Length: 455
Image (cartoon, rainbow, N blue to C red; front, side):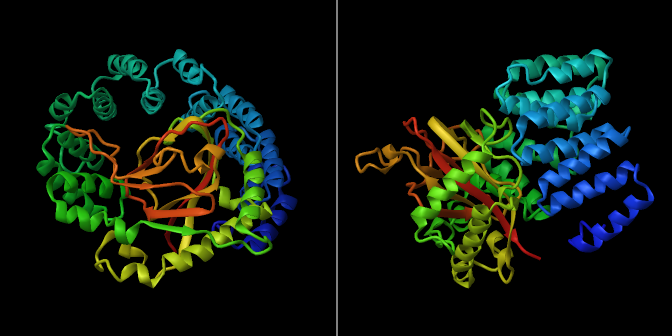
C-alpha cells in the first residue's frame, strides 16, 4: 500500500523489517521488487523478483513481473526465458500466455502462439481458448482464428465469450450483416457488444443509427477516446457541423518546436543524444502485435519512467512545451462541455510513452489512443530522403482524419503534418491518425506519449 501511495522510503523500511522477520517469505521479496521497479531501480527489482521466484510456488504473478522488468531493462531474451519458465509451471495462465505470445511475435518467432497449443493439448480451457482466438484476431490471422473459434464452439457451445469473438471475426472478414444478425438479441446494456453493433451499422451505411447508438454510449462513457472517434466518423458522414466542432483541426491540432532541454546547446545536439539513447531501448525485431506500427519496432513499457538522464531531460522538455501549448489559450475557442475541456484547470501527467523506430516502407495504421487525452508525435531523427526539398510532400507524413473503421466508401485524410526534426505534433487522443510510408534505408525515429489531466 505504501508503495502504491508513492511513500517509497516508508515502504522500504517496512519491507526490510519484514525481510528480517521472514527471510524466506516470497511475498516480501516480491513486494520489494515492486518497490524497486517503482523507484526505477530495475537491476534491484529483477534481483528481488528472482529471489521471489526461487521461494514461491505461485509462479505466474512472479514470473510475469520479473519478465516485464527484464524487458523494461532491455533484456528481451531473459524475459522470454522467464515467460517460458513460468509457463512450464503454470501452462494455462492467460497473462503469461498473452505476454509470451506478444514478445515472441515481436522477436520474429514464426511459432509465437505455440504455448497456447501446448496448453490446450492438456485439455479444454475456456479462458485459454478464448484468449488464443483473441490474440490470433489481433495478429490479423483470420483463418487461424476462425479454425480455433470453431473448436471453441465445439467444446463450449455458443456461450457469451463465443459471441464476442464471433462478432470480431465477422468484422475482420467484412461480414457486417452477419454481425447484426448475431447482435439482434443482445441487450442494450452490453456495452462492449453495442460498440461492435455501432461499427457494423456504420459499415452497412446506416450512419444515422450508428450515430444514435454511439451518442448513448458516449453519454455513459464521455472520456472514452475510441467512442469519441467512432462518433466523429458518424458525424463526418451524417452531421458536418457537429463534426467540425468535435474534430476542430484549427484549434486542437498543434505543431510546435520542442523546448530545448537544459544542458544542451541546441535542439539538434539533444536530438542526436536522444537518438543514440533510444537505439539502446529498441530490443525487439519487428512491430508489436497489438499496436499500429508496421515495419518498425516499439520500445516496451513507459519510456518516460526510465531513469536515463537523456530521457529525464526529454520528459522535462515535454512538460515545458505542454505548459506553453496546452495552457489557458487552448480553451478560449472551444465550449466548456467539449471533450478536450476536461483538461481545463488541471496539470498534465503522462499515462504512457514509447519510441518508434521505422525504416523502409514502414508506417502506422490509422488508429486512436483509447486511454489518452492529448497524444503526440515528436520527431527525433529523419532519414536524409525526408529532409530533401524535392521529396514528395506527403511521404512519411502524419495523416489525420482517415478513420480506422470500415465505411461503405473510403474516407480520406483531411490534414497532413510534414515531419521535421524537433517538431512536436499534439492532437486530441480521439483524432484518427496514421502515417504514410516512406522510402529510405535509414530510420525515422519518434517518441510519442499519451497525456491526461493530472488530478
